[in-house]
Length: 165
Image (cartoon, helix red, strand yellow):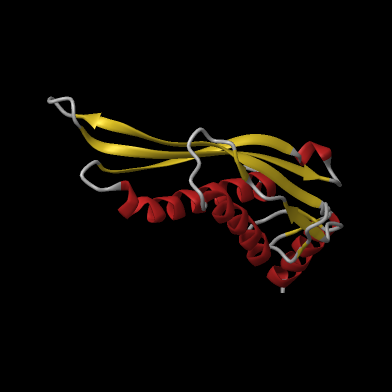
């Protein structure tokens, strides 16, 4: 019985603090909508599908992990930004000055606006990378690398906005 009362008390405390949680996310209870503007590509090297992959990934993450309505208009919570880096460079140089690995790095600058609590708003650059064998052709591995890196970037944005890490 004490456990039951403790759980009820904890639930009341969480609700009274104005926060609800799905998958560990803390979102203001008054927030009803969320918007994601198209993430444009301002990197020196433009990978044609990357903007859409990241934009769609953010929308999907918010749709799956919150109960907020996705809107094209300015939402109660809104995200915008752009890709700042898409870079492939050699890593792990061998004795004969040939790279044994290459690194694909993707960076995005994201602006988050929380219309209920400006202290929660931010503008941050997120960066992730993946190494791959230099013997592999980038055209053969690029799609998988982009998918992996984008997934991590989207998790980073979600966590910064809603898990407060």
